[in-house]
Amino acid sequence: MNITVLDVSAYVGLFAVGAVTTNMILGVLMVFRYSPVREWPHRQFNYFRLHNWSGYVALFASIVHPLILLFSKKPRFTMADLVYPVHSPSQPFENTLGALALYGLAVVVLTSYLRLKLGRRIWKAFHFTVYFAAAALLSHSLLTSPDLTNSVDWLDGGKIFVEVCVLVIAILSFFRWRLASKAPRAFRAVRF
Image (tube, rainbow, N blue to C red; front, top):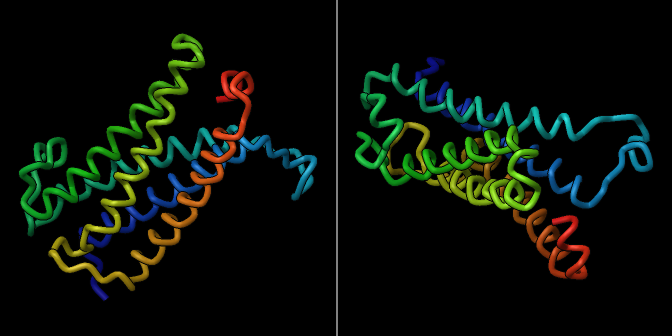
């Protein structure tokens, strides 16, 4: 079996999807005030730090994923195609979604460093960008063909992984939205 540059890029992209999904799961657990000490696994566990690191890993993998394409012989990508993929040599719409996801993740991670300077309300507004970034990332992952043709096999192992991640994030987002909509206005102002 011969692994191509496109295969490596696809695997790194799937890793980014997994990191974003993990990050969002941990973020929603924080909103629901989950405590690993009081609940399963009944261990001291700093999942806030894991949430931060999964965000860094997601951003790193999302940057490396398109950079690998620079080594592809066919189709040939340039740095301009990666930064502004509207005219990329293959699947420009899908690649633009991926670029939007990368830029959204970068905004979330970079503003997290400025969390104290921005203030909670402004930082939180930037932080909710992760939902749009995740939607763009998952759309890019579902619509892009691993060999950059226009045919997508929805039962491919990678696509099934992304479909499961979409389902997990959709369910978590629903419960997150439901909690926010049911919370009293004063409580919402403090927590959200």
